Length: 196
Image 1 (cartoon, rainbow, N blue to C red):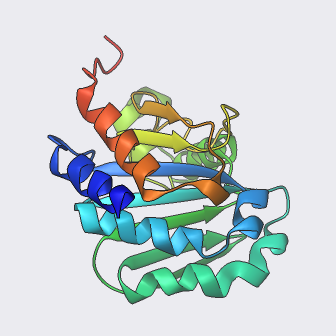
Image 2: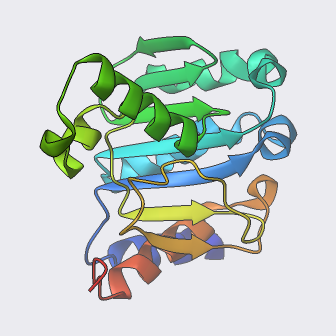
């Protein structure tokens, strides 16, 4: 009861929300609490976020395959875009939720450059806008949340250059709505400088 009241108080005091959040989780996080991703997506929808991305870090996306049915449940309440291996699945309506399994930011930037070269775009015509148009993931998260310590992958290496980062000592398995709301409160209290 007290935790519910505290959650309501935290949510009521949020003055500004990020438009897009990215959660960085590990393979161990996903296998340890496979239903948590659906729960957290619902929290994001409840507070009114526009979009959210979950990056599941793994060297072998095939090891996440058994958990795809849980991830697909997100499409019951949101517009899910699932990237795993060479496969892309979409479904549902509402808030955009992207789940990227084992994707690398370096590979994404490299693939972007290859697509630019294949189109025959002259080097002098290549600028940030051209590169961003050729990226697979075109979101620029306002807030990146990493549970369970401070190790980050290179996912969204280009897109997150001006993102705010929030590191939690709490592991994904113990990640609660209170922790999520505290991250949002922390974000609202920051003065974003966008590299300045």
